[in-house]
Image 1: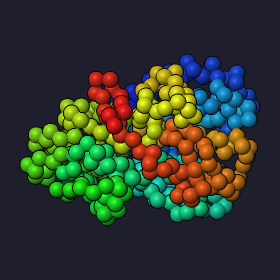
Image 2 (image 1 turned 90 degrees about the vertical axis):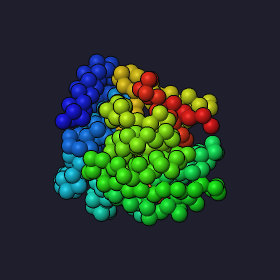
Image 3 (image 1 turned 90 degrees about the horizontal axis):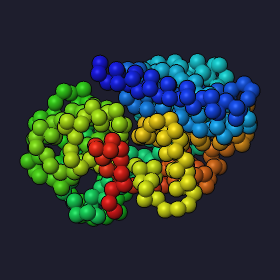
Length: 389
């Protein structure tokens, strides 16, 4: 109940802020709006992520419209609430396809994206998933946001190794996200490109469990150098249990909860050193001068204008939204899904908040695993800072 109230308050605060900005951008665009549908869990148990993703697209809308929109027409993201329910997500996607939508942004979690992905096929619509966890087929009509979680974990382990933290415990959920870690552990370790990492424990917890005391106590008793906590939902349970067990080690946490609202709620039981593996946006102060730095400056300025400190949920929707809008700018607002798909498959050298995008690899996400950087949660500043390299 508390989380739903917080999400509603955040949404109302954002709406009031954006109304102030709206009048400043209306003069920059004219004509009928170019509507882009987005299927996002605005209510329900996944709302803490969905509301943040919605905010990211709303701020992007204001940013783009202040810069002439799409060929002089304003952009409007039209939001459809799937409540975190895969069946409802499928229903909404079918409705949009029947209504003539050519591209849809959605799939906030892997389960939502995987439910809808089979429907994204010629003649369309194209689906740009906001879940990094999916692995779309090459050349398919499905694209995935950000860097794949397995590469994020590998980047985190590589960072720990570089700082002499080699005895690592895994604490993963029993959901699809956690199972993916279980099934690909050897591949994750291989991706680090280093030797000497010792997985001293590999414990599991149910994402609907209220406690994981036995598992957390076992991990704490082994005195690991670091712990990786990973699942798509239910992350409060392992964090609270590890805190109760007296764990002092740094924790790499799945960025499914890299939102200010979630971490504020978890404040009483967060580890003192809480790391997230992210794209370039998480290292903004340390990014050297150049196009990526310029893109990040505009990204952070846009959120500052809206009165928001951006988090992972905001960022995960920003780049996909920006890329879709660029496609419509280049192809025209009435572009068909086949044109959008072909344009995306050949996009390269596009700069956004995570770095340079190159879709010619046909991995359907366009980012290099080497783009992973480490960020550290700053509870006093209620934000993230680049971790010491």
